[in-house]
Image (cartoon, protein in one colour):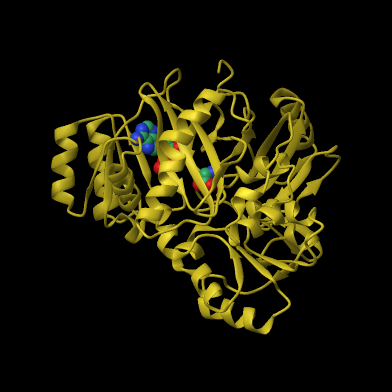
Length: 426
Ligand code: AMP
Ligand code: GLY
């Protein structure tokens, strides 16, 4: 099968890397891709946010058998619906299911309606009513812009003053554009052992009938060591999560994961694809922080290298709604991903800096924001490279990853040195 993956980042390079191992897969394509995806796939220079342009391309390329839509924006826009209407086989939810990520108001209402544990919240469209509610509840309090905001539309406020300013920023100054015309205001959850609360990402494969959790992982959202600095798209990940136990998995399957699949079915919004559960272990049990309608980035970079089963076989089983027939198996040991970013990220940064890569041992170098300019590999985004190492345990994988990082360089490269050390105490 010839497969086209839609997206440009590390997640897409990781998906392509996993697909390239499948004996079922012939030629790979990536729309639009980066310098890394170009090494294993043909990059296709079409704007995937332009549905008509993608449809035209698909019509002109009948040799492509399968499409994987990886990023949130084209899923929310209905790209899978458009391709399926043309008779194309796809991995990814339709628009009416992708709303589980695209609208926080939708997902909070879903959880409320079906009794799925999450932080208590209210949704507002009026600034005055939201302000009144914030003043009544007081701090700490969490503000969330309703729509997609590159993972940056959430403000965890410690003081009432911060919350009042944040509310103005989101609803009046429109810091996140139209994503902020509705706002979800929720209680701040507390972790069981840590502050801020301990978080785990559970990606799942689901065909709407069966839902299978992947190996767990943990993200590092803040820009700097010790969880300091601004929120980013993710500065590194590791797998598996150290505090995960079979008991927690059972609790989460029974109270969150299966009920969410059933809830979406009851709403007539069957979800097929990768449904991502961002969870927190709180002093009141496991709760949902957020849903994503897609593979996480950079979670995918540590989860897929641990997958023993053929990814293409799983994708096809999801499309054909026979996921229950596939036995999904995972490697033992651990995997760590250190993100190398451009200096200044997530705020302003330079592009076009030449990258040098020396000896990286047996690490895999996944490209996020790279390009080839005048025959040279250069930076082309905020997050540039992901250094991925497998090891017998997290420490082993960490050592390998940072040994490779020491041999990679460009002007003003920025990264965290503490990926993989959190939640040591379980
Ligand atoms: P989200 O984009 O919804 O995942 O939120 C971004 C981050 O904000 C999460 O990863 C948490 O660290 C934090 N967060 C979100 N909601 C809450 C909450 N209700 N209580 C505490 N922390 C939260
Ligand atoms: N790493 C979090 C996300 O993909 O949204």
